[in-house]
Amino acid sequence: MSVFLFLSFAATIPLLACSGAGSGESGADFDEPVFERDFDTADGDTDVEDLFCGAGDVGCDDGWTTSCIDGVWVRIIDCHAYGTGCEAGKCVGIEGDVDQTENGERDEADGDVEDEADYEFEPDAENPDIDVLEYEEEYSDIAEAEHETEEAEPYQYPPAGEIFLIEGFGADTLGGWQEGHDVYHVTTLADSGAGSLREGMCSSNNPRIVLFDLDGEINLSSPLLVPSNISIDGRGRDITIKGKGFVIPGSDQVILINLALEDIGPDTEDGVQIGSALPDSSENIVLDHLRFTQHDDGGNCKNVDEAVSIVFGSRNITIAWCRFDAWEKVLLAGNGDADAALDSQISLTWHHSYANNTGRRHPQARYGRFHLYNNFWDNWHMYGSGILEPYHESFGSQIQDDGRMLLEGQMVRRHPGNPLYEAISTANQASRCESGGDLLEYGTWIDPSSTAQLQLGVGCMKLEAFEPPYVVHPQAAGQALRDEVIAGSGNTL
Image (cartoon, rainbow, N blue to C red; front, top):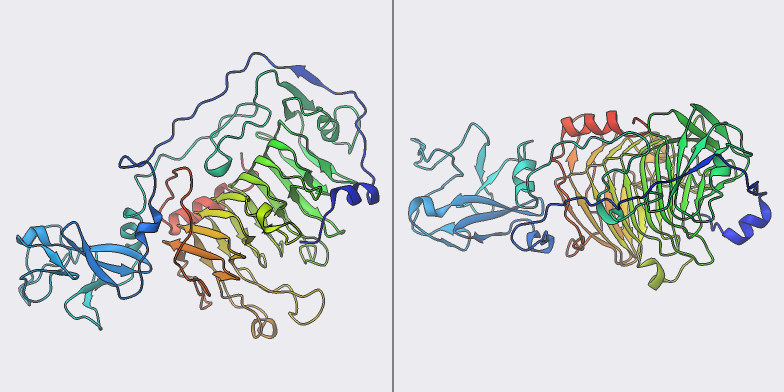
C-alpha cells in the first residue's frame, strides 16, 4: 500500500467540513445486546495445534488407527470393533487390511471391512497395512469433523436500524448501537451539506446510527472521515459511493453495512482505510455486506490501491459477506511503515466473502493474527507485467513477517490468463508464506472447474497458526457453499 499519511493527506486533498446542521434524532434508552455463543464442550477452545500432522504420518487415537490426509488427522479404523487396541497405526492382532465401516460386514474377497457406499479405499503405497481414503468430495466432511462442532442454521439479518450478530475478532463491536445514541437520516445524495452522508459524519464521536431515506449514487470529491461510535447502515437501500472511499483514522467502534463502493480513484487511495499514520490504530471495526467494484482498467494498481487496508496496529476487525470485483489489490494488512511491535497487534476475521477477477492480496498480511473461513477466491490473475512499472504480481492468500494465519473451509478457482504474464507469475499459489510467516489450512476446496494447477501452502512450515479467542462453525467447503457466498455477498441486504 502506498503510505497514506493522514496529516499530509489532509493538507493535500481538500476535506469538506461539517456545517453543524443535520437531520438527527435522539436515541432512546439502549440495552447493550448480548449474543449467546457456542463453545467446545470439552474445554472451550478449538485446539487447532493438536490437529497438525505431516504427509504419510500414521498413529492411534483412542483405539482408532489414524492417517494424515492433507495435514489433518483422520480416523480410519475402530480397533474396538475387533476387540483389539491400536499400536503404531495398526489394530493389534488383525491379519490383512481393515477398512472404515458403518455396518461391520466383512468383504468376502479379502476379509476386511469396507464401506463402499461412501468411500473407495486403496492401500498406502508406502505402508500396505494402512488403508487411506481416495480424496473425494466426501473427504471434507471427515476432515472438518475433527476440527469443528455442528453447523448453525443460516443467520437472518434484521432490518435497518437494528444491531446484528457479528462473529470473530470484531464480535464486541457496537458501532452506534450504544446508550444515548442518536439517529441521523441521509436525505440527499449531495457530497456535502444538510442531510448528506458527509454531514452525518459530524457526530463528535457521540454514538450515532446513520440511515438512508433514499437510493442512488453519492459522488465524493474527497474521502469520508469516519468518527468513532458510528454505524452507517444501508440495509434495505441501494447506495453506491463513487470516486472516493472511507478513511477510519484511528476511530473505534465503527460498523459499515450494506453499501457499494465503486470506481474509487484515480489517486491510488483505498476503498476503506482502517488506521492512520499518526500512528493511530483503530479498534472494533466491522465491514459487512459491502461491494467493492472497479470498471474498465480502474482496478489496476496504477489507478487505485487496496479495496481495504488495515494499518498501524488496527485490531479486532471482522469483514463478512463482502464482494470484490475487478480490483487488483484486495486487502493489505500491515503496510511495512509501522514497527513490528505495533503491527503485531493487527487481528482480522474474514469470512463468507467473494473475490472475482481480482489480482492479489487475499490478503497480504504481516505480523498479526488472521482467521479466514468460507471465502471464495475466484479467478485472480496478473493485471500487467511483472518487470515494468507499476510492477504487478498475482497470488491468493499470503502471510509474512512472523504473522500467523488460519484458513478453514476456503474455496478457490482459477483459469490461466495471459501466457506472457503467467510465465513469470506466482498466480497459481493459492496460499503461501514468506519471511517467517506461517499458516495452517483445513478443508480448502478447489473448484472442479478450475483449470490452473493450484498450489496450497507454498513456502509454509505448517507448524503453527494461532488459536482464535472465539469459536465459530465454518461450513464444509463445496459447491453449495460456493453458490451461497456468490449469491449472498455484497450489498444484498
